[in-house]
Length: 188
Image 1 (cartoon, rainbow, N blue to C red):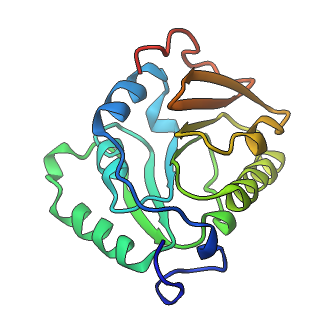
Image 2 (cartoon, rainbow, N blue to C red):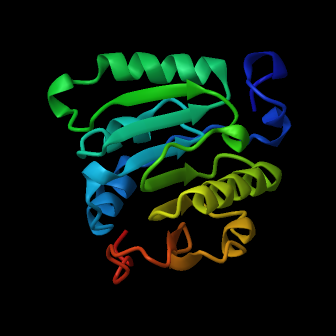
């Protein structure tokens, strides 16, 4: 957990130790979701150094956005994005936002929200409530890919979402209108 002076927002006390996502997890998950990528914005809450952003940028998402509260990790993520091979980028644009995930204004349109054990239950509740408000304003497909799901209760309480437990390491929460692949996530 970074010191208070280097983070945005009041939720820094609820942060968890940074750990990078295994690239193989996303490489296996994203194709199985059967999304029409160009309609979706990929949002990584707790983006860290940006590894998931780089991996997601290889798919034709409308946009890829990472939200990170630690200033130093944001700087590293932006540096990693600058170094990434432009030939591999297929998404419509990439952005790293230095901000508090609990207060982040979600973009319009269908969303794939990615989280890799980014924060504690207090912030997770704020994020889920934020997603609930965004869905009430604009009903749309939302897929939440929650790796290392230590605090799933706030998501399970959202009536418009359905839980798909993939394995002990990952749970998906999808809008009930979601038309993507629900079957056989056991290989992820």
